[in-house]
Amino acid sequence: MALRFVHCSDIHLLDLEGVGVHRFLNKRLTGGVNLALGRRKSHAPHLFDAIIERARALDADRLVVTGDVTNLALEAEFELVRRKFGEAGLPVTVIPGNHDAYTKGSVRVRRFESYLGAFMEGDRQSGHDYPFVQRFDGAALIGLSTAIATLPLYATGRLGHGQLARLDAILEQLGREGIARIVLIHHPVMDGVAKARHDLLDLDAFKQVIARRGAELILHGHEHVHIEGALAGPEAEAVVHGIASGTSLSQKPGRHGAFSLYNVAPEGIARVHYTWDGDEFIAGGETLH
Image (cartoon, rainbow, N blue to C red):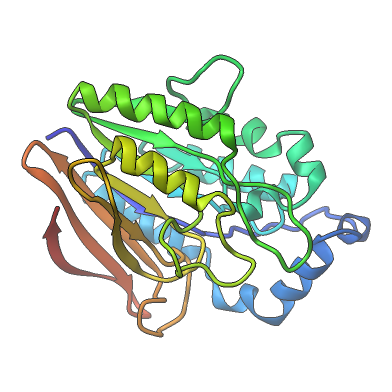
C-alpha cells in the first residue's frame, strides 16, 4: 500500500485571546460579524479532535487538511492550529485557504507559512513555497496555494502564472515516473461549483494544466459542501473530491461535518467517506477510482 491518509478541510479553529479591538479595523470587521451571526455557532472545534482520534484509530499514515484552518488569520489562531497539529499523533500536511490569508498584513508577513511551515515540508523549487511535493511509495501529495487577500465579502483565489508553470512541470515529471499524483488545492476546480465571489480566478488555466498533464486525484474544500466530479486529462479523467467543513454541525445533506479516508495502491485509489450525524462520524460505502 502506497499511502493511507485522512482528508478534511475548513476546520476554522478560533482563538481570540489577547486580540485587541484595533485588529478588527480592516476586513476582519466583516469576518467578526460573520462569526457573531452564525459561523461560531455552526462549527464545533471538538469535531476536529474527533477526526484526529478517528484518523489514529484507522491507522492513517497522515492527516491532510486543505485550508481554512483559521477564521481571521490571527496569531492566536495559528498558534492553536500549530499546537493541534503538533499533538495529533500522526504526520500532518496542510495548505492555506482564503481565511488563512484574510488580510494583506497576514500575507505580507507570511503568517501561515511562518506558523505552519513544518507541515508543508517537501520538495519545491528554490525561492517558492508552492507547489511543494511530498513523495511516498508510488504516490505524491502536491500542495498548492490559492490563498490571496481580498476585499470584504470576497473569497476568491488565484494560483498565478508562476505556480501553474511549476505545477505543470511537477505533474509531467511524476507522470513519467508512474507516481499517483494527488493535488491539494483549496478552491473548487469545476465550473459552476463555487458561489459568486468565491471562485478560483484562474480556473481555466488550472484546467488546461490538468488536461495537458493529468492527475489521479484532486482534493479541495472551500464551499463547505460535498462535491464529486472530474476534470479532463490527457488519457484519463482526474477525479475531483470536494469536502464539507470538518467541524460543521449542519445536518443538511452534503453539509454534514466530514472527512474521508483514502487508500492509494497500485490497483487504484479507494475512499471511505465519513459524516457527522450529531453524535459521531459514520462511515459510508467504499468507492474505488
